[in-house]
Image (cartoon, rainbow, N blue to C red; front, top):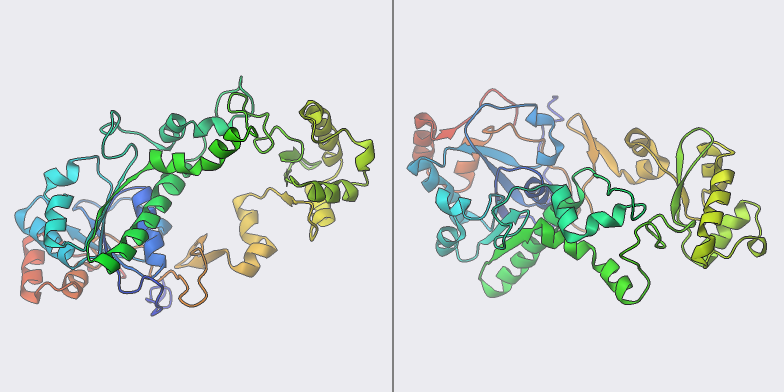
Length: 396
């Protein structure tokens, strides 16, 4: 890593001045912390003592924050953590319900010493309910909310097993970040923090609000997956294979966009089966599939590009990074030697930015404790005793 790569950028995002403690965890909690960091918050990750596994310096999800290693099982370590909490605006933890309380830094303890604290709790099932103490993963949360059935292609096909980002990151981390910012806004007005119960099940259920609305309107059949207008049933919202075994996303839902696609295919609307009749969907799908299989993907991309036909290529990750639109907008960036998605969304006045590389656990222990108000002699004693571990053999 070069000196230029390891620099810390002095840019102020909209959350500049907000101080966040992230108790190290996996998945949605770190993603929420990354989002806050990208927006300018000072996020400190509290890691546990132990060997460093893998290559945390290239773990993009951990970008933008500093790390301190504290042995919270020792009284002096817990006291040091609680001193950090006293100076914080936000604490993020992702334990099962009751674990933080047993470790000595539950919300009752933390919020009593810091009434403005936003205490954000990330779990799969929530802080209460029959499943609250059970383990779970993205697939379980999608299944319990009904959301997984939305990915079925037919009622007699098994639901797929999508990679774990819908519930973990959409229903979990993103919802938690939204809750944190909302609670911070309220704390500025009232002077009082609050506890956030961020559950991946609740978050995924929220993501399905549109489906509930369309079902109530009679526009969606929950009992027949793969037969609705945007779940793969309709010929105008589907994927099609091309001659070179690649794929297109074809999504001209609105009639005017559909007419544009049909015209560019040199077809006539008057001569085609009625697209508004679901009984004709299979026939239309077969027709379009036959046409798209006659030419390679690049041919169709060239034909439809710049039009309102809503036909675009389905890219792999390498292709997505090189696509001209993504390149022009810098949707993907290389930071600290790692290609990764750029911060989003984009703010005109206080833009988000990636401020520093992912931290090796303990790389900033002394720096963080001093910055957050602990006396230098106490910091030295904590490090000398091994309650706080400082890594001095890695770049920061």
